[in-house]
Length: 339
Image (cartoon, rainbow, N blue to C red; front, side):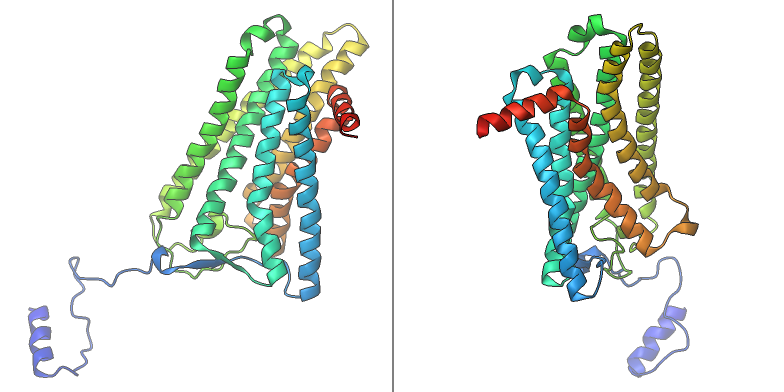
């Protein structure tokens, strides 16, 4: 009845303004909500608005980026070149170096370009690609670190079965599983995140595209689906952490039973770099996403994001090369051969 009256009055006087909406029932026609199709670009968080500091940021990031590429590139080249390093441990280390190069190449070049050209913009498709690649490399790296802890466990606790449990085919399958799981995880999160309607602007509080920042722009309750995926991923990460802890507890018990001090030192020297890499990677990542909201601030979030996205890929080659005599000897031979 109310809608019929509204139609009749509109026909009589088109300019008439009514004090009530035409229909407020459950079947009312609502205006379409603004969604991500109307967003053509996102605005990233700048480190500074001062031109001189922007250029300083560019040169600092360039130095870090080149150091990461050089360190990881040397590890990849050395392992591929030296036949003595064609073992499971160095095979997984080569994969880790590839993932580190991918991780830092996903975020740093765009940030450097924005500082150099004094802009904040990243295209919608570019943001989606950045989210996918970053999640892909980060997820695969964590799964690979879990596999590397199993490699150290078998090498120290079950040395007689090392060749059987970690043959070349088994190593390839494990590495492929880490890459594939990371790819699937990134694909699910990216597709689900960028299917959400976004109506709270296009400014991201981060120097690269990150899912938590994009979720803040969502105006739909469907973001609960993404939260569900995050919970599932968190459970998987927690299981990996438990596996790593249990593996190193068993490794520690086995090492302490070694009678000679030289044997214990050799066993520790192969485990400490991997444990240091895990601690650096997990510590910075967990603090970035699990820190209490009471201490959260844009400056702290920016600093923490730099720590977990730049520092591990840059320091991992240094950590492994400092404590690994075989790798240092092979690297020295490679350099002498080049000279």
